[in-house]
Image 1 (cartoon, helix red, strand yellow):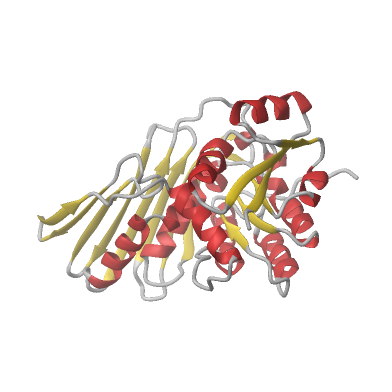
Image 2 (cartoon, rainbow, N blue to C red):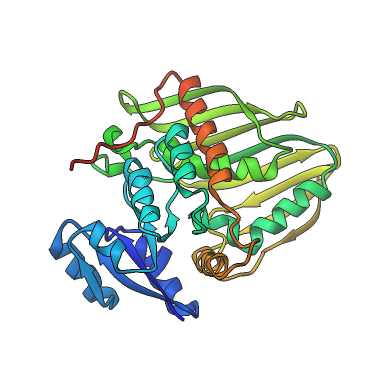
Length: 330
């Protein structure tokens, strides 16, 4: 049986996140797109050879087996709950919800359904992720500090990522990756100590830095941006009593990556972790979870709630309000 998955919206990320992976993952077909703009939906389906298009999200949900939700952040929670209520599996783009309260609501809606709900932290499904987690927790001794950065250039200020009513902001976009990677490499889940934002307009961060403390007393930091002096950077560093782990591009390692372990200033080894696109691994894991593999979903709602709580705390520490869900008419 082939899993028919449809996308809520013709998002720019959809070709990389779903169109291409669905062509190489056996047992999955990208079956449909729904968009409020029929011309946009028609153009997307024609370009990518998608067989079905719908004029409403609800209509798409009714006609597929699983839903990909790449809508603006403020709509993630609402439409994920709609899809779950209709009995559909959901692959929801990060961040999981607008804030931790909504994340808990979505998790509650999912509980007991038997459906798969996966947050699309695609980096977590690449072999690089397990490699660096293993090194961090086995080769460095006691972890003392973790530093993560994810900065991209997005000077198009009309983009939805800069809209407060759509739950935008750098911390919601690139920052959620930095926080998620920090959590995976650190000794337990941290708490936010301090944060500082650079605002594009009141309430909307174009850059954020934050300090964390882990239960062991180890410290951590994140730096993220959509527009800052750090135009493009994706990295992680883990400092331990027995060495330091340096990781280049943990977010999209299929393009390039480098893992380096140093001790006393000397490189012990340096390697590139080979693998397919992160999105391909993610789609395979989504299908495997639907088929009953209990270990396939590495980013379930329980994980998402922790990340969303930290995002909210970063905003508060920076003197900004956590994001709010977008109001849906009707």
